[in-house]
Every structure is written in C-alpha cells, then in structure tokens.
Length: 403
Image 1 (tube, rainbow, N blue to C red):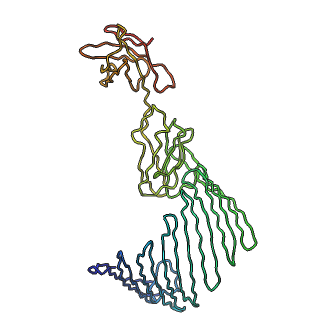
Image 2: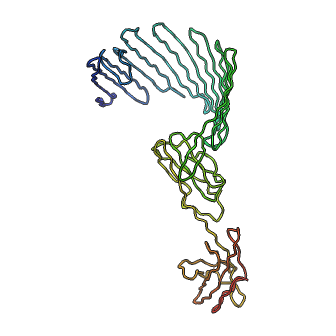
Image 3: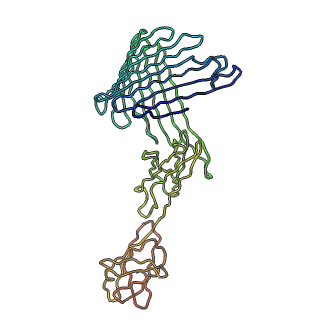
C-alpha cells in the first residue's frame, strides 16, 4: 500500500494484494482520493477483486464482490453539518447493491441535538426511507431521545429516557417505547453493588409481556485475599488502606466506591495498557495521617489485576506547653529538639510547641539566646491524634516529667 499527499489537493492512496488458496491465485487492487478541509471534505474509494481472491474469515465458495465504489462529501453549516454518501457493490452471482444517502446534524441548543437523514437503497428491490433523531442531555447521567423512521413498510417512532448508573455503587434506569405497527415498551433497572450488578427488565411487545432478573459479577483472588466484585472488564485494580475504612476512591475522577471495614476495595473496568489514575479522598483519612501522594497512575495488562499501594503514614504529635523554673513561659522562638535527633521545632507565644510523631517518654532540649534547658514529656496512650500536655518545666540541670 502507498499513500501520498498530492500538493494541497488531498491524499492519494493505492494498494494491491495477492492471495493463493484452493480457489487459485487471486488479486485485489484499490485506489483512493480524499480531501479533508474545514469547508468541504470529500473522497472517492474504489477497488477491483478477481474471482479467485481469497479473504481470511470468508468461507470458501463465496466469491468476493467484483468491484466496489464508495464516495462521500460533507461540509459544515451554521450550528451543524450536512453530507452525502454513496456505495455500489457489483456482486458475482447476485444482484448488485447500491445505497445512497444524505444526512444533517444540527445543534439546536447546548442540551439538544437533531439528526436528519434520507436513504435510498437498491438491494434486489428499491427502498427509500427518511428519519429524524432528537437527543436531549438532561444533566448528570440523565438523557432522553426521540426518533421517527418512515419507509414503504410504514412509520415507526421511538421514545426513550435513561439515567445511567454510576461507575461505582448506585442505580440506573432506562425506559423505551416503540410506536407504530410493532409497538411495544421496555424498562430496565440496574443496581450496582460493590460485589455484583443486579438487573431487572420488563418488556411488552405484540401482546406478550416478559420479565427477566439477572445478576452478574466476578470472584477473584489477589495478594492472598479472595474478593467478590462487579464484572471486572478489561482490567482491574485493588486498593488497600489497612485500618482506614470508608475512604472514597476514584478512577479517572469517577467515584467507584469506598473502602470496606478492612480498608480494601476492588476497582473494575480499567483500560488495559492505558494510563488510569486512581485517587483516594484525603479528607476521609484521620487528621494524624499523611500521604506521600493522594493519587497513583497504573497501566494494567489486559485481563489482569494491579495492586495499588498508597504511602500512608500515621503521625501522632503532641502540643506541649513548657514553662521555665521561674514560672515564665518558654520564650517564643526557642528551638526545641528531641535528644539524639537533629530535627528542631519552634516554640510560639505562651510557651507552646508542637512536636510531631512522638509517643511514650521523650527527653527534649530547648535553646534560645545562648541559654538552654531540658525537660521530659510523657505522651499518654490515647486515641486523641494530638494530645495536649501542660505543666512541663524546663530545668537547667534536672529532668521533669509532665505533671
């Protein structure tokens, strides 16, 4: 195959292929010309195939079309676009097929879009049809549409409303009514659970009614854990936040659920070999928890799972008020260090200093303006992520614990 740009006119292409099978040796040649422009686009594509040409997937004994000719043209108009298309196939042993159509697509408003079409087909018999389709965006996941199609067989209309289910747990609804000779109606309710998708359908057509209930899901094992989930799709991931239940999780900014009591969640329906951004809601974590990053990008393999790990660190600090031996507050600006550590923390007015990530008995040293003193803080065992310690005395020679 060869493709070339013909100056500013358009793109020219040519291709040839040869096959050899029990039918013999056959060939196919094709040519094309296309021009894509902002005002008018058009193209012509054609090919010729010999009777012995063999195509993979086509049963032996079914001869290919003798030749095919396709043409199209489209152009923008205010608030939309219009176009025409044509295809003719010359068949071997059967009548030729010809289909020609015209279409228009118009944006009526930011929420409404109208499509119109006319089609004439000659496939053994001649058929002409006309139609229109109106679609409405109702906000969120809700939409509605109405269409009508008229041909020699009669006129039919369709009306539908749908509220799509979210990517994560939640529900959705769809209702469709057909008007005309084959009138009928159908309604579908979908409920997404964390471990399955439940579907209820009811339909009425030609005087008969039907109801169908179904449940779909998946069971898997990953990282030493068995789990149940909605259908996994192309790829999936698991997120573990041990000890942090109820954390909202998002995939490409779409909510997919919350972590269970063990801090675990399965994220189905990821795109294989593409970038998928998994994010957790930092506001759902306790105040004493810090994250290296609230999102992780993964590129899973097809039909495979990925374990997503977030670097979660639980920091339990203490707000300490320190006085000197004469009863005055530790001066603002004094540097406070944990003995044996190079980290330092600054005292503010009132002798208060926040010391992060400490527990148990801790010896500290304060320095300011060429002076220094030492004190000992005993952090009690409590669920409070930031306990407050008062009554600590910083002495020049002796250790004092919190009183």
